Length: 312
Picture 1 (cartoon, one colour):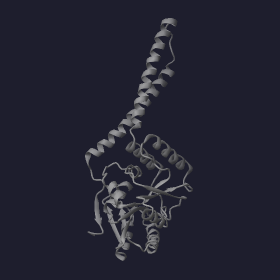
Picture 2 (cartoon, one colour):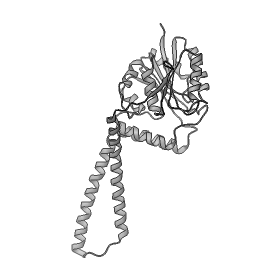
Picture 3 (cartoon, helix red, strand yellow):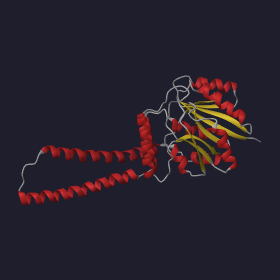
Picture 4 (tube, one colour):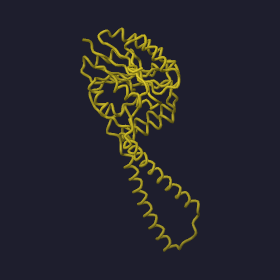
């Protein structure tokens, strides 16, 4: 009996890209005759005709399944839903914009079946086509998070990876609300092989990731897998206590020796602003962790389903 490979595709306003993706993924399915396929599309509350396009695929192809959310819950929720609803012995996560080369699936499957890997991930070795400022901050993010976190994050790593059912079950078991999948993939361990490729531009449509969204996502990643920022805020506070104590001794000594001449107020204002800014910075770090805890304790669902191919 053939093993089943589930291809999970998180979609948000991808009506233009989906026909290209579906065409390419069917070509790969025809090549990999040793496997049965299912194409699982997760409609993450799209406002365009993404769901209609997926339904057209589903009517013509029994391998197509879909899950449609009640609203946009974000890519992390869509990927989790895809993993949770997948039926395959092997599962892969892919983007609909063809920035994840479907042709790599054959090589990924070979590594898993013949070299005993649990996961074969992909990473971009170039960021050609991206704005330079975005590429710079992306590289800096990976340098920072790898110094702060005990979980290794691979620079340029994509969500595109082929995993065994055992690894997917381990990821599903971590049903935390604040998700950062790249970290979770590393956290669960398992033997992983990395395939490198050069950056590929979108086949159609526009990216949904603005610089600001990526920045917030980076903060989520850091707070999800490291408590070092809390330690840093503590150290900063301790250092400023020492500095202030030294300054008090200096002022007392100066007053006793030279008297107490009137000092300029600009320097005082600058010090107040600096100390106030550091206090707000440290409070912001603490607030990030408190907000994550607050959201987790609410125990809200990661996503809400409006419709699936099974009950449509």
